[in-house]
Amino acid sequence: MPASNRPFFRMGLFLGILSFGLLLVGCYPTHFQSTFDAAGYVAEKQLTLFYYIFWAMAFVFVAFFVALLYTVLRFRRRQGHDEIPRQVHGHTPLEIAWTVPPFLLLAVVAVPAISVLFELDTPPADAMEVNVIGHQWWWEFEYPEQPGILTAIVTANELHIPVGKPVKFTMTSTDVIHSFWVPKLAGKQDIIPTRKIVMWFQADRASPEGGFYGQCAEFCGLSHANMRLRVIAEAPDQFEQWVKGQQTPSKPAVELAGLAAEGANLFANVSFEGGQRCVFCHTVQGQAIQGKVGPNLTHVGSRGLIAAGILDNTSEDLGTWLQNPPGVKPGAKMPNLLLTDDQIEKLVAYLQSLR
Ligand code: HEC
Ligand SMILES: [Cu+2]
Image (tube, rainbow, N blue to C red; front, top):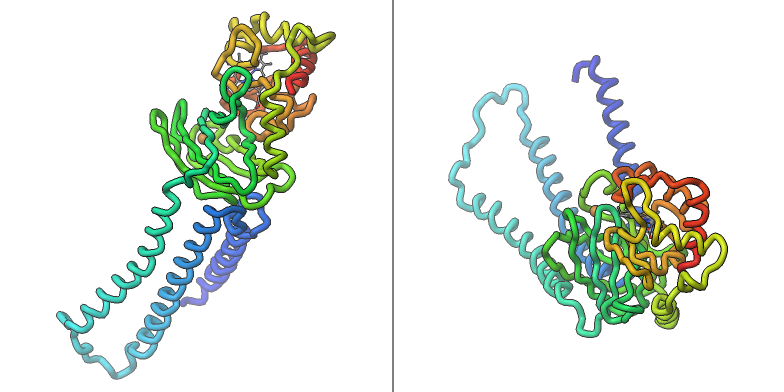
């Protein structure tokens, strides 16, 4: 190497090692979205398979480089050796040597990979059903086996599941291709408009405070990175309690008083910018008009986060959201309705009554 290139080489080496190190930080098991901390059966199977393939390939890598290095050093051109090396074109034993072992290696990887693939393809018969509907840029979850007040329980972005029970997801999308991904529970699965795609997973331990983190893993437009979700895996009796809560109607609008009552009126009856009303896009059980464009807000007060995990469900954050949704979340399908501070205060009071 010419001496003048050396600083560049060193710089490159340094940057290479640095970025490799940074990449490895992503594997840290305690990270919220690390796949190296499997929290359930499906994720464990996939992780075991990953390690198996990883070590098989690590073996190939090392064996190959040792052989390569040996060959390069041992047979390098030496001074005075100018004759052309022996030619081995059409050497049958060599041809066999670089055909059969790779074939065997692929078989070694393929057999367990395909068997895990088939095993995980079919959800167990006793799985609980949840329908997942991807929207630009939020998640809708429906519980067809848990009747809600009128229909099934419907919620957004926060998926409650009981620990130790397999959950079967039947998934579709209303607009573009999304990908459902909760790294600690299972690999990614694309969800495609007009199709129903099935996957399942099971949480074998309760989720930490705030749930297992997930997010959309297929580029789906402007707020793709803001399309997050949480899986709250809880003990079966806690889950039942949550189900009961979702099945119990929130306080009907006529029983509300003060700010919340005024908020309920704004929500149902008042047209804002562009002639839009909240009820045109949102369902609240008991309201005469039940829009389906945005999340079901029947029990919005029981959620920890709003807007697919980018804001907390506090008075302050609700206010920030209502003030200018696309300002918080670029491209949000909820327009800026030019609400006044007074209207926002009332609407927040109403939304918080929906528990
Ligand atoms: C044109 C349809 C539309 C209208 C009108 C509309 N919204 Fe929304 N709203 C949405 C959509 C879509 C979302 C989901 C945005 C996201 O997370 O990307 C949403 C999200 C929300 C959320 C967060 C819910 C959650 O669980 O994440 C609240 C709260 C909300 N809207 C309240 C209101 C109120 C109050 C009004 C009336 C002032 C209103 N919306 C009017 C479409 C609408
Ligand atoms: Cu998406």
